[in-house]
Length: 110
Image 1: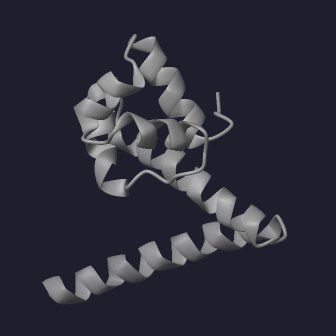
Image 2: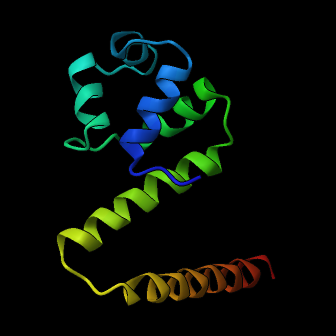
């Protein structure tokens, strides 16, 4: 089930573990004020915290990245008033980049 935002996800998981914002912040090296702003969507969490969050919540890192980056991308789309077609264009761009990276690795191996 998708969350309304990455901050909502953080809050729900934190509460599921019965951690206060202070408890959770100490576990990932952020003060409780920053945790509050992240949960309310007024501050973006640093991506370097994602592996620790996945570990603490017992989740696969790919799931945490999916939630984090989809929220980040959606906020940019909303802020810049982009059409919804940007999502399908971005998906195609990712496929292209993966293909390009794949072919570059194959050439380097040869």
